[in-house]
Image 1 (cartoon, rainbow, N blue to C red):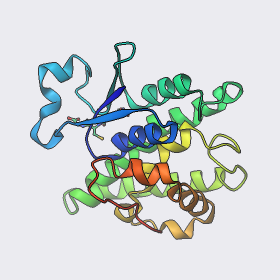
Image 2 (image 1 turned 90 degrees about the vertical axis):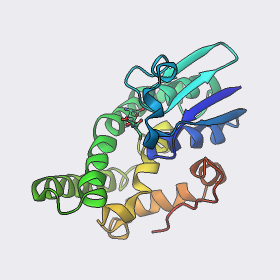
Image 3 (image 1 turned 45 degrees about the horizontal axis):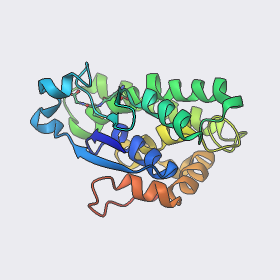
Image 4 (image 1 turned 90 degrees about the horizontal axis):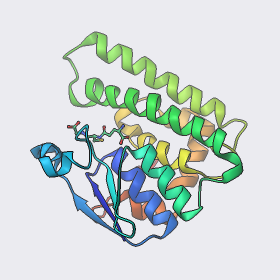
Length: 208
Ligand SMILES: N[C@@H](CCC(=O)N[C@@H](CS)C(=O)NCC(=O)O)C(=O)O
């Protein structure tokens, strides 16, 4: 059994979606990051940067932090969505999400959604970067069905929950036809719908 220690955020949703996709038995343990539970010593032992998500694989007593590393671990364990002969390309799109797409859109959330009016520089900078990310993903998806290849992989699973915040981004997802096609298709997967609602609150994936 896998225990997923998480909060209801895009990084958290990546892992619940993956666990639903690979149909592993799992339970969610909520970490309330608004109440600083991530800084408790017992959690910090599992996650040195005090970040969710973390998994504990009780089968072999392994714990893993960093969502990209968790997706790789689960991909290898299940032999799903991380095809052996496509790992070099999957890793690139996964690392691109981890090092660029997620952190930059996260800053856009901070300046544009949570704290508008506090920094014109921050708002403009991350709005521009977010738009660039939409354009770049759209371009990739103009000649590839999914991000890494013609197969749905952990790179898509990592990226999807970030694009699912498109209403916060105010960029206009529907103007990006390939990204919209990809988004719509992934949002219709049963496992994605279930994993997106990781706290069972009836949360629906935002439509385009
Ligand atoms: N690179 C990390 C980022 C994780 C991350 O930023 N988690 C946020 C929530 S989405 C968090 O735990 N924030 C609490 C904090 O920083 O104190 C990953 O992908 O796992």
